[in-house]
Length: 470
Image (cartoon, rainbow, N blue to C red; front, side):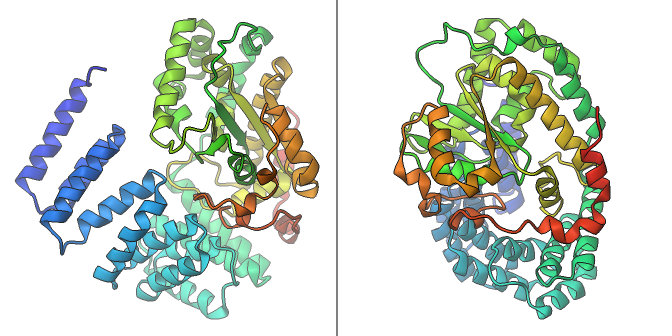
């Protein structure tokens, strides 16, 4: 593959910057970011190893390397670096927070809690660390913790840290049954996030509507599919629908590798102009030749390949928002399986309202827009399902946790996977999990009281939006 001249020029510029300021952590960070964006992870790690040897007492080469490993879903490899970093610089709160994030991903809850506590003791205004504690789902926050967060809130200047602090306070107050104050903090978090990452609800609805021009034959599974399989299993739906649990179940199968939430499909869609104008994108899907479609499928698989660690024949891509691209999946990887995970819309939408989504996620920040988002998702899935149910698998979360012994074998059968006893005990799977549900899926499956019931007095805008007939 020929290198992009602009990319080559940018790399040379960054190399020159590093040469001009060899002791500048910022210059090295920019160079490493460029290499990682180009999926040249080995080159990035090699560069950082060289800097670490040249500067054995410096923190930043090890910190950058730990960050690269974490971003590449290699938390297990990063842990030893984190331990060294907090020993070298024990008073740097972000090092403790980064350490805790990877400990939490690996299910090392007690150690993660201690690391987060070390962070907030040094920097009470670090919203990310407080949110990390909230996501561990361990012992409830104390009244002293709530007081510390409320006292620190005026000191939080970074708006993203402020958003995370509001979410942590909402969770803490909800745990102590102070539901009115809890909801106020969740609302503050979402209102602030909307100013930072505005959600395009109208644009999304137009994107879904554009797909109505597709004929049933577009979605139909061809009878002459190639005998070899790409092995992709997409798990889609609303965030907080139970998709992490479904992936944990499938990743417990000896033939399936769980890759978590990937941006690979969105990147392929963006390369086709999906976010520029919806109708031309859909028409482009219709006119793709078989060769062009195959190249786009190969592009997706190449992007995914950087995260694969095993030779298992199947893998999961658990990005919930991939529901937007079911038509693209059908066109470029017609052999792929799609699992649509559903949960009660009120409970699911409110759970999303109480969850922090990072700056890369275009997701609603208000109750009415959450209802519109859910309707857009359902409309898109109905378009695909009405035309091609063959490789679509509907999975009801409430039924799954109520009757896993029946629902899990049925899911495996529908996906063409043999039954595996290990899938019935996903909580025993030690794989790293990077979503807010990480600690929930490490416990036994059971039906829990849905917290939405405690907040119903404030949720009429959501209810009304969900029940709009279009």
